[in-house]
Length: 418
Ligand SMILES: [Mg+2]
Image 1: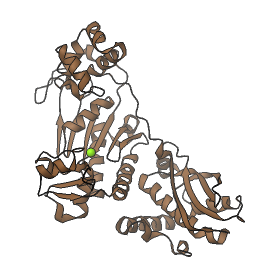
Image 2: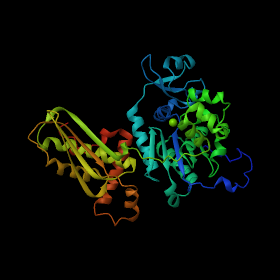
Image 3: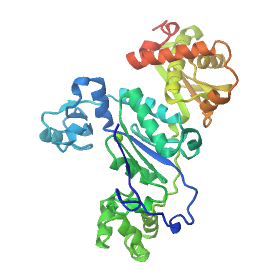
Image 4: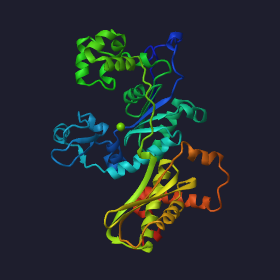
């Protein structure tokens, strides 16, 4: 699948001489950062779900006449169609294209699944969008091999489990990994070798750097700075005069391949929840329990898809007068099982006032420790009786949801009252 390109410090294809010592002097212990980016994501999902679209120019675009292109398949890009282009313009360039409205629910579900694959190797996953993420796999290397090996494995598993191709960049710093994944698209794996970041960047146009827009590019061009290498060699005083002190220092550092920014796991992934507003207000535990069961099962399924398990279960109850109460409990062990989450939520329901009509309930799970799920698998005591059976059931539920949608897998007990 795809190709691996290694761009040495002295250019692609050139025999790499011994890297001189000054290259490494004062360098921090090397990190292994991956940038993973699904290829033409929304358009690829449409081609995945409808095989008749494969090989055809597919454009996912806002349906209104003033809409813009959200994604274009590689077949459509050959006609010059690009993301963010007005749909009307795309129709001029590619009149025979297949134009589809976006299905964000489906993209979101697949994105969760893909990010779940990533979280098998590290909890340090920083999503940039539904289809793009940084991973810091520095600490995962002992368990899973080097950064390149991990990138290969993730590309293979994403392809096998979702049918989607993901391009990968491997580097010591974030922005070089991002540039690398972009250079290899589609279906590529591009590696910036340790110590080779500055040399990898040098021939690229300066507009590739984060934070260099048209204005900055024009200012740099007046200084005869066209490539990132030019920028690395530019006189700091002249740069500062043209861009201001801090921008000049920051960009010059990037040009030298210095980017200390860490991979920061997403805030959103710190809690996984499901909630519903009822068509009519409900009163009493009996009426609410089936809904809580359905919400707990959905949360559990999302947790498993993301490779997460959490210790904190939160119940949210909004009354007819819009007052909101939340009740939470911390469990002894991280959970990704719908029944266990349901039972914790029900225990919290007893701490709410159930004589008042309720318009919404929600269940969420948080408190994911780094790598807790892995530890559970690797080091935990034998699972309690019944756990294995529920895990098999959960796997079956996940497969059904995958095939028929979330509504298909709400347990029968949760359907009462619907
Ligand atoms: Mg993408």
